[in-house]
Amino acid sequence: MPRPVLLLLCLGAFLASSACSPAPSGALNSESIRLPGGQVVEAEVAITRTDLTRGLMYRTSLAPDHGMLFVFPQSGKLSFWMYRCEIPLDIIWMDKDRRIVEISANTPPCRSAPGDCPHYGGNQNSQYVLELAGGMAARYGLKTGDQLSF
Image (cartoon, rainbow, N blue to C red; front, side, top):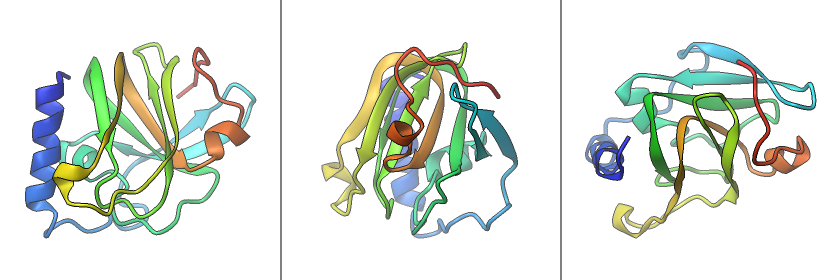
């Protein structure tokens, strides 16, 4: 997805943010993701434009063995921001073959105005993005080149 399209998604999230609320637990489908070390993470799956835009906004906690998997219709240079996120997250970008191409560890929440929030990633083509609680990518030993199964 080209950067302008992703920025439009982010702008849409900002404009709709007053109507956004956290997804109720169990409202999204979930997927078991097997990591290279054999660990399994249960991830909520964001596929719709609304879910892709909302992500983990407003969440105040995330269990160590849980996350959110973003599934995009095609590969592209996808950048993420942390606007309205309440907790640090590890953001893990994967290509179409589910190989890690980039990791932003302990990405801090942004409590600034949307225009002041930095963007992370988007340096490599990716089609999937996994968000975990901050520090979990290191705890699981995840690194660029690893392949995840889901």
